Length: 465
Ligand SMILES: Cc1cc2nc3c(=O)[nH]c(=O)nc-3n(C[C@H](O)[C@H](O)[C@H](O)COP(=O)(O)OP(=O)(O)OC[C@H]3O[C@@H](n4cnc5c(N)ncnc54)[C@H](O)[C@@H]3O)c2cc1C
Image 1 (cartoon, rainbow, N blue to C red):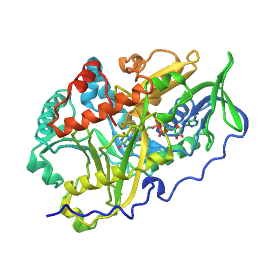
Image 2 (image 1 turned 180 degrees about the horizontal axis):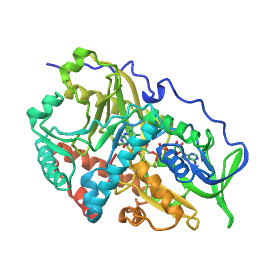
Image 3 (image 1 turned 90 degrees about the horizontal axis):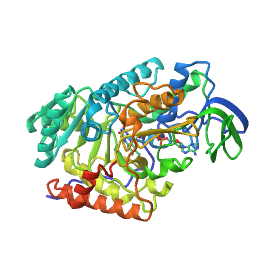
Image 4 (image 1 turned 180 degrees about the vertical axis):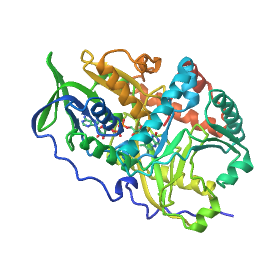
């Protein structure tokens, strides 16, 4: 029997979410000279949450956002829409790096997810926000062993998790590849990512934030009185600045040692019929992630399509960010093949969209924070593929850092410490490609990590999406 056939040929090369109806008309570019109390660079989730929370804390603050493209065009509008409570890129990663403050980080993450849900309600953001939970599935014995060990630790730290054996997980979602799963009942919401970005943009406008789009900031100039953002046609003179530029950050040189741009890719299917959906179950509509080092993430949309992404995390040598990298046919083919293996019942289903986007990977996989220009500029970056929820936490950290007085957030080791820097190019490319090769070998070899990966583990270093 050949493998099932799935159709990629008609897939359009655009992020499904961003092609939906309802995109706001772009705001005018920055033209001329203006001033602000707080100027935010970037209108992804990070910048939008920062501006919104700044206005909620102090409605009289004059806040401006300056965005190179349009709000949400980048990672924030094209992601999988898994809005996780975890602010540490998962429990295991958090435990390995911040064991002493993990209980605090878990609490802060849960509060953050609750507050995102409350903000979605408060501003009536139409973004299909549902706390559907997440299934972490094992498709190999070694993954199942690791999941069971992880489950025990998560349960001991009070996470709302349940262990599902093969029959139990297949009763939830029926894939012949499943060996077992951990169901995280409350630690993840699913969201329509572009509509969340567009809704946050509208919420900002409703509170009086001024937004300039299609206005790349070329440089930040500092004087004793103010910081000034310069674009081609204008400038903003501000008392304080937030850099919320994700993987695109080039404005602050010191950030470049900590983040590398990593491309992640996704496919979207056409809507499933009732019969197709019945063939795979999935009544509870959880988000799903599998448990290899190279992992897939997948979920249903409101109209019962399946978003299927992940696995290949690609670093282009030299670290260039280019629109042409958003399409990668070899990765789309691999993803389609893996989809066929996971859901053979859906043979013949078509993919309607294929796209990629860039994430800001740092060596500890979870965000880092800091200030520059005498505490007048704050930044957060390094969310590494789990920033949909965590960027809101990062926004609060940046505002606390700018306010100056120590808070619970700014006292955290996670906030005070930095990831290990990546080496400069061309060594950086060599190191990352060796790591990617080793990760693929480990997945093919019962999870066994070679000497290189074990060395990186011992140093607390890594590469992920
Ligand atoms: C394919 C894909 C799938 C993903 N899936 C998930 C998921 O399911 N769950 C999850 O938690 N995370 C996921 N992520 C990661 C998540 O999308 C990001 O962590 C998050 O969106 C980061 O938000 P951000 O605001 O920091 O960055 P971005 O959304 O990248 O926004 C940064 C903004 O800054 C602007 N900017 C940069 N430089 C300048 C400048 N000089 N002047 C003006 N503006 C500038 C950019 O134009 C951009 O709009 C995924 C990412 C990708 C690419």
